[in-house]
Image 1 (cartoon, rainbow over the protein chains, first blue to last red):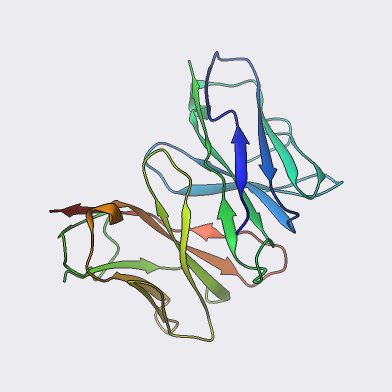
Image 2 (tube, rainbow over the protein chains, first blue to last red):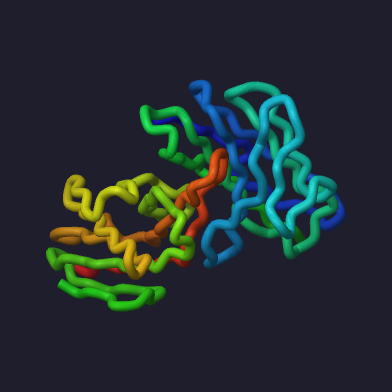
Length: 116
Length: 113
């Protein structure tokens, strides 16, 4: 499986500011995704990061709030913009296409965000 | 062992018992499923997967069962150990190109010694 790293691992931010989270994979992958996990909850898909084009967002998530970049097959960023306390969550990068099965999906360690 | 007929948010077992965690998935078009284990402060860890053309798959101490008739998935853990304590999630892949996994509600497994 791919080794996935995220920066930062955690942060405490003030409301109204923005934070950019980086995701780096040690091998080229077909697909990259960003999920949110609110405290004590399951994982919710934010968007699919598309290489060289705009991300595909799920219902309830918009580009102005969560801009995403994917400049190549091993790197992506997620920005949480104009943060409010409701954005306090774990943000997880996930990849697919690094293993023999194109369906296997792996996760990074997550970025724990607290907004005050 | 202890089994859970419907999804329950928590499951408590004794060390050495067998554990069964259940999951109901949502879409009859789903063609692939994964079970993940998430320990506190970590990202989800891939445990075992199964394709929709199978009804059972075994790994090391774990077995996944798939019942497509009732859209039900289960994870069996044999000889449960304290290190198995975590939140377990099932996830489904809806059979559309380029889609990500959709996650179910998690079950917190607590193993006491």
